[in-house]
Image 1 (cartoon, rainbow over the protein chains, first blue to last red):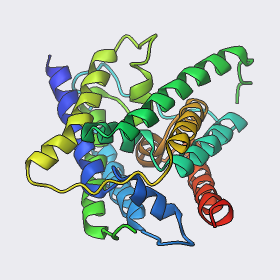
Image 2: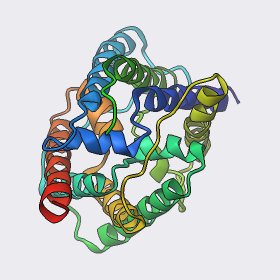
Image 3: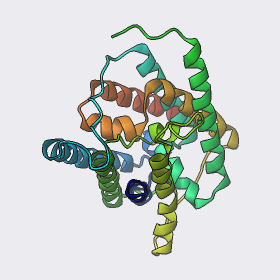
Image 4: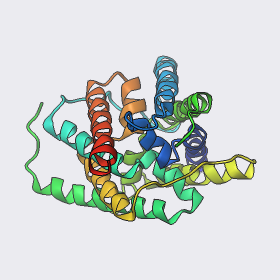
Length: 145
Length: 140
C-alpha cells in the first residue's frame, strides 16, 4: 500500500511539473520546434531544469542509498550501443511528435483536462505500441552489440 | 502564439526532475512515461500496480492545479487525422527507440547514457524538421 501511495504522489509531482511548465499544451511544444515561426524557447528551460535536478538527485541517490526504499536493487546502467533500431525508433518518434505536438509525458497529464483530442492521441499511441510489439516479435533478434 | 515562460518552465522542469529522482530513490525505477505506460498495456507487466498509481497521479495533477486556482493554457492546433497519425508514429517509435523525452531526455541523460543522448538528438532533430515541413513547406 505504501508503494502505491508513493507512486501516486510521485505521479502527481510529475503531472504538476508538466502542467506548470506548459508542456501539457501541444501548441507550446510545437512552437518550440517552429524556429521559422513564433518560436517559444520554453521547452529548453523545462529540459534544462529537469536534467540538472535529475543529475544532482541521481548522484545523491546512488551515492547515499544502497537500495531503493521499496525495491531490492537499482536498475543497471543503460547497456548496449547505438544501433539502427534506437536511432530509427527515435526518428519515427520525433516525426510523430512534430506532427501531433503531444508526447506521452505531456499527453497523459493532459487527459485530466478531459479534452476529447487528447484521448484520441493517447489511443493512437497505445495502438502504436501494440503494433510495435507485433512488428518486433516478427523481426529477428538484434545482433549483440 | 504562445507566451515564452522561462520561469514557470524552469520550475516545472525541476518538478519533473524531482519526480524522476523520487521514483529512483523509492522505487528504483526510471520515470519514462512511455515505459511506465507500456507496462500496463495487456499483456501487462507483473508490477502494473505502481505504474497505474503513477499514471493516475499524473492525470489528476492538472485537476488539482485548477482546483488551487491555477490557469492552464491548452490548445491542440492540429487536425484529428494528425493526432492519429502522430500518435501511431509516437507509439511505434518509442517501442523501438526505447523511450521518450521524459525517459531518455531526463532520466537517461542524467545517467550519462550515450544511447539516450543519441535518441534525444535524433528525436529533437526529427521534430524540428517535421514542424518546419508541416508548417512552412506543406502548409506555407
